Amino acid sequence: MNNELEVLPENIPKRMQIIQAAYKLFTENGFYATGVDLIMRQAGVSKRTMYVYFPTKNDLIVAVLELYRSNYEQSLNGLLTSSDLNNREKILAIFDDARNWFGDDQHHGCLAVNAMGEFAGKDSAIETACRIFKTWELGVFRELVKDIPVDAPDELAFKLLLLLEGMGAVAHVMGQPCPIDIAQMVNDLIDSHRSANLTDGGGI
Amino acid sequence: MNNELEVLPENIPKRMQIIQAAYKLFTENGFYATGVDLIMRQAGVSKRTMYVYFPTKNDLIVAVLELYRSNYEQSLNGLLTSSDLNNREKILAIFDDARNWFGDDQHHGCLAVNAMGEFAGKDSAIETACRIFKTWELGVFRELVKDIPVDAPDELAFKLLLLLEGMGAVAHVMGQPCPIDIAQMVNDLIDSHRSANLTDGGGI
DNA sequence: GCTCAAGTAAACAAATCTGTTTACCCATTT
DNA sequence: AAATGGGTAAACAGATTTGTTTACTTGAGC
Image (cartoon, rainbow over all chains, first blue to last red; front, side):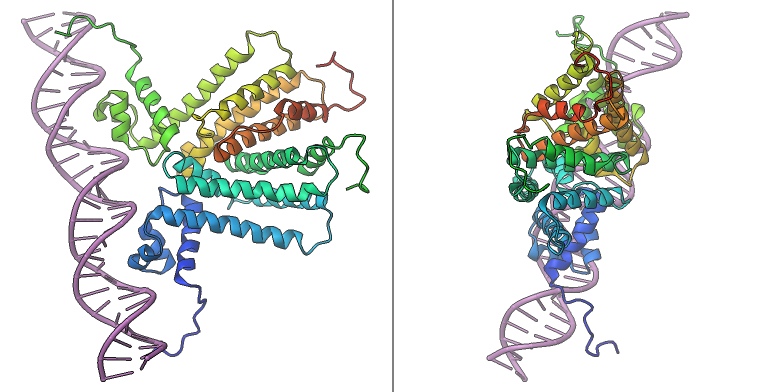
């Protein structure tokens, strides 16, 4: 009786269904600890289909890491493009967003860091996916820093990455958000790269 | 013929043998990915004995995390107690040491962070062991910062922890040491906590 | 010399893991 | 109406997992 034209709740292609189910499970339970049987059940897909799209579990892990990056990219786009913030304010917005995010009970640490912990030295495709993620993050900061008049912009971008990374890891292990004024710290960091002989870009 | 009184290479009690073998394997291959059979073989101990000392694998993981902390504590003692550095210099020494350490191919990220990635929400004893490690690290910085005349010393200590953590994670994922001047960054961080009305402690 | 604690080696249990294979279903297209 | 592509469900294979148990060894102290 339920074969009247169902309005498919979401016509996400199977491949995406699988990746999203796996993303959730890997994030919450880790990679090794999550079996493919559970993934396929959560995705509502047969095991046969899973292995058509992903010949090995590790291939699926790589795809999940790509989704992780893409999700964060979209989230940042939503956070930054619509507003009329200058680049310093955008950087501050990223950290403020991360602070809230990391304070959530649902925070499970950076997926790329976790993946590296489980697969470093064991699967080079996964290692590469992790590096791509961090390289991309660094690139985001580089782009933002580029238009702020500072000395050694690339080094500043790297320092910002260090800080973001530290926040995520510490919050995950300690189980609580940063008890410090991150905005102040980021501002100090940026200011420490502004020597006296730089023309002031209007308080940027 | 080889049953003449062997000079036992090291008479480390069995328990310690097991923990040390497990430490090495967990560090290099991850926790889930390391089976107890391999641990027992590397430790040169029967499985029976292993399960006498550690009723479950997770009990062994907790013990390994304690050894990890203890090892780092001893390493820091060797680094700091013998020398006549002031506290700022000691902090710089910690970061310099870490920078070298993280640049090594043998660096596998912080074991507590890796453990948290695999066992968060699944084993509270392991979670606790991870938190103890980070809390101890924070305590080290708190002690060192205490004698430097700064504003908000506890916040400064936390910032130092963030930075150390970030260095470790980024180096692990990127597979290369920090390309920035860490000493400069640490000095800037400390200086940013020294307001004008603090009496100068002699350049500490 | 006997006893006892501590350990070894290996078989075993029961579950779980990734990955394969078989048989079937069903909607679309030609 | 037949063929085909994409999917399901479930059995299966074979390796591996944690943990238990059994039978034996060995060394030290009384």
